[in-house]
Length: 307
Figure 1 (cartoon, one colour):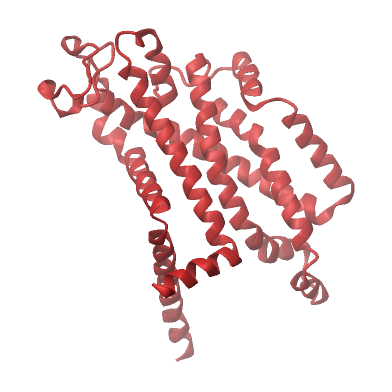
Figure 2 (figure 1 turned 120 degrees about the vertical axis):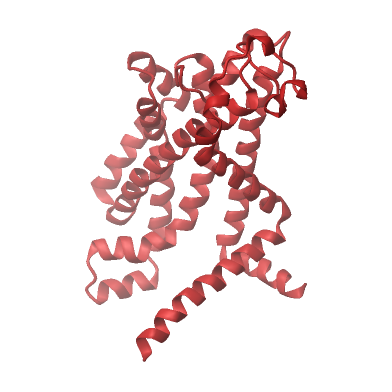
């Protein structure tokens, strides 16, 4: 009878934890609005191309450079139209998939590789740590944008190459951050106890130390997501990022620069999308940092209970 009770207790504990996190999020209204915005963007990323692909590609020369809020041509032109009469609203929704996919893939790849290398460097130390740090220094000696420009100028600026070069440029950030955390955590009593009980290195790293580092890594990933989005937009603006017929928000800004004097909205609305998502990620990462900090989370819970 004990096993079914334990099985029922686990979903109940998870549900209670989810409600507690939702309550903490609701308490910080700025973080709550940021989370809602990001959920909307994720919805557009998943379903946007499926729902709006035809409208984003439909050419209507009669609506060429139509101004925003001109609903005479339909609600799809609420943000205006581009130089070929294509709906800006539909194109922004469709472009969200490539923009978010590139940023999230690059951050996930750099977080996985950099986090694993940081765990090894912090726990092992010695020549392994020194070698990994020198490699990180070599990568960080080039600014992310400059490194991406050089690589993409030599190779084909496709989606895979953009993701790869952005991921490589951010690996040192995760490596150094995780290493610094591990250097402090490995001296704690629970690691010493695990060693005394005969736990092997892999178990200590991935069962005991990695969960302690994960909150910091998640917060950093949210910040890096915003940074990578800006770099990708800059690359597309320079013409060495994603190439047509693919579309990203940065590429839309680049396409509208020739019309800034007569049709400012071509670059303005994609720029607003980039700014909104970047700001939401930064604000939500700040909330995550406070919630995952035991001291700050205790204050959140205390103030929530007082209400």
